Length: 393
Image (cartoon, rainbow, N blue to C red; front, side, top):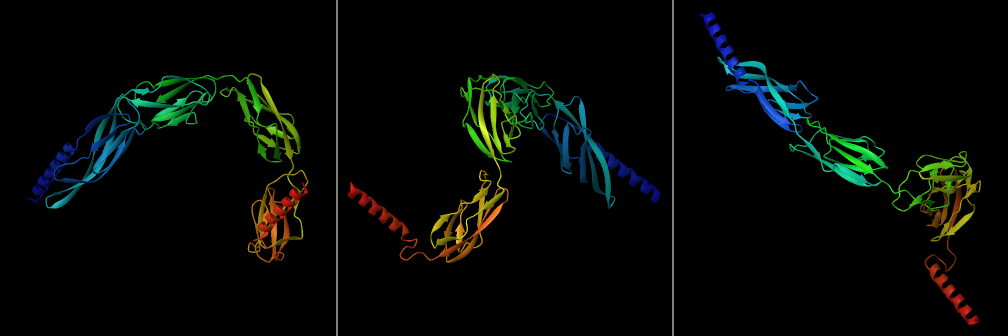
């Protein structure tokens, strides 16, 4: 009797599971590239789905995620035929006075429909430096997650400053140099990728000149000559040359590197043979820096400290510091100001880390000539001199 009851219970259980699995049979969905599909979760009357895992047999075309409440599928690229998304789930239900547990899976069939991309421009004629925005329109109305923009010659026209761009609804195309190239927008929608032909035309220069005839660069530093073309809308590639590369070298972009002390001539030549030249003087870095000694300054007064360099034709910039700002303050141009009676050390440092220090003594101002009335006395003296000169006329 007990065995018979167990057989009936088992049969009923299997029948319920069959009913559930039949209810959780596969579903069919279709969509366009860029579209997100929402897949319903498997369910059955009297059973609760506790957990679900979603995956696909084609991760290159579909992005899948989900839980026990349903799945989400984004179509990333066109595919022919069908693809399968599978949901594996665990469920529970109450039967025979006890909680029963089970698991299963259900397949969802996905098909992809073709759509057509159209660009806002099919052919453009530009001048070097011109910029234009290219944008696609998708006949399905969906944005494309993995659309790829590509130029077949980045030297003629670039896309957002590069030879490609991904996932953009629109891009900025910049005309770089004369020539013709093709911009392609590949959205993987199942139809041919649209293209835009870019023709870049340029006005040849009739003249070239440097804005300065000579420049000075410290050894180990870089600089460049600015130039202008005639007419102003002219375009050309420039080739650069140095008369003495032991003194200064110049790269293809006109950047000059100061190698050693001396003078060299830098020449720029256009595609059509026009040229301009200028001299670059390379000055040495300082081997030594010194400051004057025995400096004195009155409270409230200022003085500029002048460093001396060895060799004398060396060039550099300076950084200044004081060891006691309450006595002597110093600004970035080397102007010291007496703040209070006492002494302070002022240090100067060159670009190549050469240093020198001097001591400044701050004293009381002369009687009746402190910093508060000095300007008044100077003005009074100037008026007295002007009056005396008028009387001599």
